[in-house]
Image 1: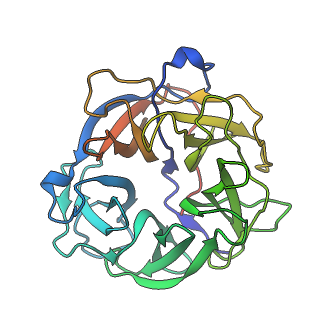
Image 2 (image 1 turned 135 degrees about the horizontal axis):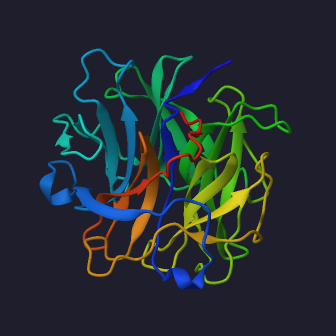
Length: 325
């Protein structure tokens, strides 16, 4: 059986309206801290905008790494996947001189898989499918395969993926993938589920896992899985802003059965007036270091940058961590 690491990693998404419009939820409160990466300071940022980040720990996987942390990012419009590195999760981050690592690709999700001894990178070179690349050093990636397609579920796209180790009894799988797909006949973008026994061949479920509710702009995307105190939450962004919106989440049961447009929706983070984020997050991911959880995401609109927020885990709370590639 393949095991996936690191287990320190969690994932999230976006924000924009007052928390008074939604019920308080069980997840910890996050506070915006700083901009970590900005296009104007990078050689590889051809559009000047940064859409998504994915961070891995190199310890135990790479001899003599450039830094303790590798941060993968993508400029807007399929410009390619870039890399920055640091010895501190808060930065400062140094750009890798050989960017881009993968050309004409966007929205990276990078994980280490023990059984293969490789880093696996998911992203898309076109919106109708998500592909996978692999690497032994986290820098030189080779194309492996197409993982999911929009055609298989009758949607316009199949993108913004995150993969996890999460066995489900009804499928006999070991891994799951959360992603977004737009149903043109209904005019809504939903969160979908795919599953795999080996992390290479994926089966896509044809019923949406989560559908948007009133007030979410008919669009929810950028999903991630957060396991907290023995409970399962899917965090996503709605579309209440321009290509972004609120960071929201909804609880699912132990087997991740579809909730469609049901289930209480909660805000993850309140708006931050007059801040660099312009009250806009997109495509985020969570990482845990000790008693601090970091939310890294695209922030702001003009330009879009990579920023982070933090939450402190109360003493005595569960130390459970999500199993993520």
